Length: 231
Image (cartoon, rainbow, N blue to C red; front, side, top):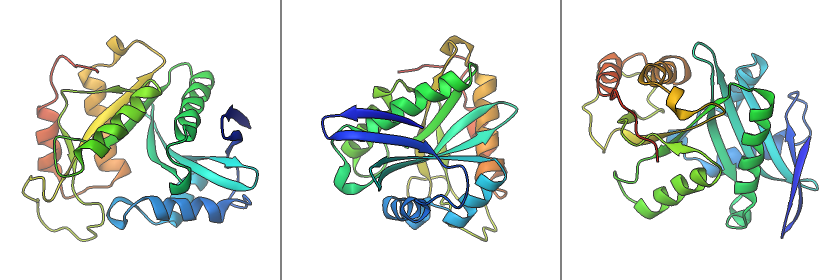
């Protein structure tokens, strides 16, 4: 158990150990409130991943109220963690709690794994509406030490499509254009295009199980540059 103090009080950070966790209903409520159906999988699926040691679940609480959650997916070969979902209750936003929570998680993960590579996906402000909101999200992750992989083009089809029989035409109306962000205990100079491609393949095929998008995946991989730019 970890914790931190800020001007709104003392907060506890806990790692969920079993599905009998007393705060499980609050975790699910925050998850369902924070994300639209097109961006989520059923919460029971997350619990199945947790059972199989494929997902870590952390939460931040003040006394008996859960304030924020962080769901972290675990991958091997290459070894990396994905910040799968991160959410703060609406009424607690803008108080510095989310930043403190995530910063402590990054620090804790670094201490637990000297070869840490943590990856996050954030919507690209260059596409679609709410550009200022998307930019603020990127700045939020930068505040905790994450670096934007600036020159890698990456996007995902809608995740709520159950039976896709064809390759979608690539356009902003159908695909979500994203930026990849990374933080590593090693130098970013060791973060090569080969690793980037391996991570993207894992995300498409293992994490999102996008079986109908081989041509799209190939296009993304072919456009990963030989020299990476971080901001």
